[in-house]
Length: 111
Length: 166
Image 1 (tube, each protein chain N blue to C red):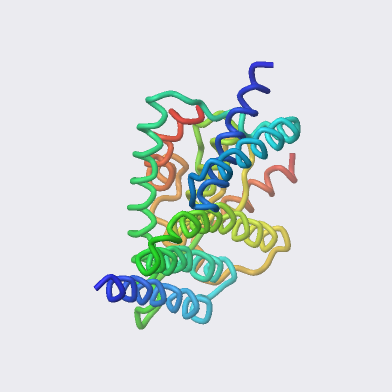
Image 2 (image 1 turned 90 degrees about the vertical axis):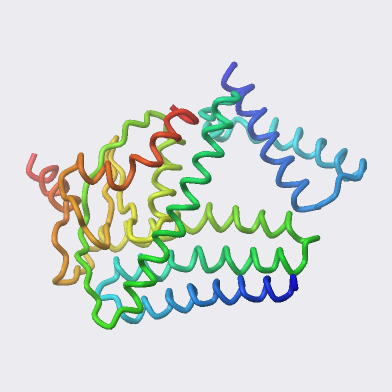
């Protein structure tokens, strides 16, 4: 029974990981790709690790530690990617409705 | 000196917790080694970072910490489902943009945790921080003025983080 529950949780996690991969292919520009690619995968990774917790209760502590490290490092890397993209003026998709950061940078440049 | 002691204590607790979780044992030798290592490392490394100095410790903080974890988990789940729905929908109907939000958090650690929380919830991604302004890439912009965007993105986290970090 526990094996079945663990497998289902891992399966749910892999569905989110698949969504992340599909998002990278389908999204129009690099910012939106970062959104789906690096972050739809957080829940996917967490669910896979929690599913393993159900499988092997003895590993729970270590797996929770892994969840903690994923939560700590994942946003830093996606932030760094996004910041570098914006600093290098990587073009945005036509759907973009507003860019306050560019406005703020232009204001700072004029002053 | 007060803040140095606080750094050492916070770092010591964090390191010991990681050590115990990684070993998954409360054997006296394991605990003793952990205490020794945590003491040496926290005393040796405390001077390098002030990030741990801004964490307050009190029963009230613990309550808000648990509440924050619950709010964060709920947001993580909801946002992930939203993005998954976007990705699987036949036509991708998004209105992305970079909006500016204002944080009322004062401490640097608090701002870092807020930025990380915003980035971790899919659909919002912190691109840059300038003082108390966070520039957030939002996959589906619902409000482009700073007040409305702050309410929609940051208010739920800020309520608890302001108690924990100030």
